[in-house]
Length: 462
Image (cartoon, rainbow, N blue to C red):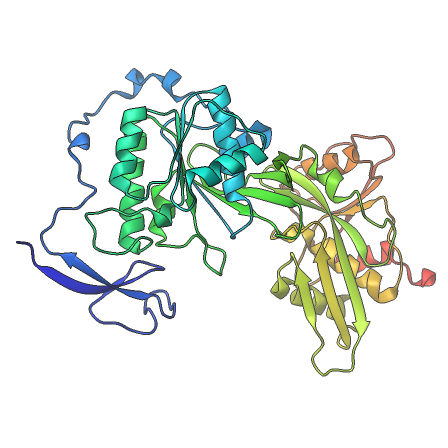
């Protein structure tokens, strides 16, 4: 009889300890150690006889026709996956509760069952009746979609072997458990072993799988970080719950480029892809209002034009407020310091608020110039040319630094009808932006933030 021993496992990083502690020494997470009873000498659940007979093969003998990508729910989703769904791949999708993960995967399963083949939808959180009601609400009536409310992994694996589906969806991986392990569902060992066994079966039978993962309050997928290393692709569904737009962002992809983004709109009929997100984000802007600028950002390989709003208000507090929605607060503080030191704007007694319209979150530094000019415009109460787009990173010396794929950004601004684009001066080792795609578009290459302020916000207009 195998001996048992007790250990305490961190639910965030997977570190093991012989005694309980309030904070994990490895990842500095509080109250993350959970008691776990394990058997000594017991074989690992991931060791299966199915994998003992795998033999090496010559690379030239591998048939690439078996790896053709499968269609999946329109162009936006396929672009994030790198062109389609690869047979045998495992895709992990995370996102905040209520953001639309289950709705999106229900549409993916219904579309796949109607266009490609049999789909097995395993929902460990909902009953079969609830799934039926959702598919009817979304207007889906697939004939080859099987539904299961099973939570035991061994039963799920048996269902997959019996049905031999073309696609498997598991919602969610944190609620599935393996009977051979004594720990509760959602623990580090359960999540790791369940994901590994599903991965092995997917590779063995060339079945693509979607796994839904819960997220923590920090926005990362719950469970050990090894879960993201096990799967082939990691996607995050982002957006504000009170906005209708959602961004499906790829942060890991073994079969395509990373940081690709698909834009969807949440409607009563489910997720609807947005083919031209820049035009949608700029549809309701108040052109020419003080404190409003247009930033040309890049999400993956897709250029997006978004509106940046800023508001400055005089305050008598010793510490003025710095608030940002959709923009990094620390970077906002840096831009305010550059505006004060290099441009001469006295912002020490101003409350400053920055908002990225549409619920988007901008993380790349190419939006620095648009944010800084929006703040200066609001402080001086001067309007910005509505046909002006801004792109550029700002350094601590007030200089404008070059950004990647400048030609694609300029072309996107020209396609949407903008007549002027302010860009950094192109260095000798970089390619210059192309000729304007539309007649009348002028490109202003500027070296510093102070020059941009003098050009777009002359003092004699104040």
